[in-house]
Image 1 (tube, helix red, strand yellow):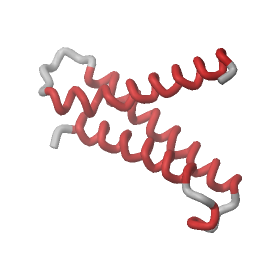
Image 2 (cartoon, helix red, strand yellow):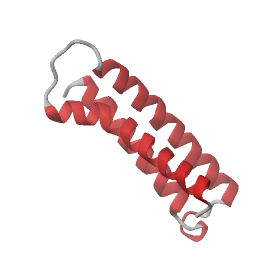
Image 3 (spheres, helix red, strand yellow):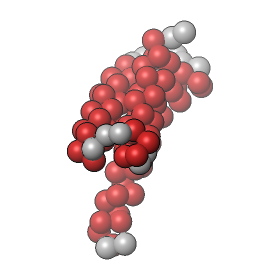
Image 4 (cartoon, one colour):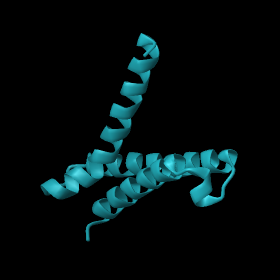
Length: 94
């Protein structure tokens, strides 16, 4: 498996893990709310760093197939779309 695919999959995994850790109720995990937020933010941070690394490495002059391009560039695009949605919701007061 290509190293860009591995980085992209790892980024998707950590972003998804952060989402799951933040969304699970405290009764299911036994964590306090502060612990759940901390774990979710750490997972988001690791996922974002991996997404940035994969995106920057995919911009080099090498030819990539479609799946590798998606896995390398997709996580950063999803993070960007999510930040845009939160920004627009904050600006409109919705």
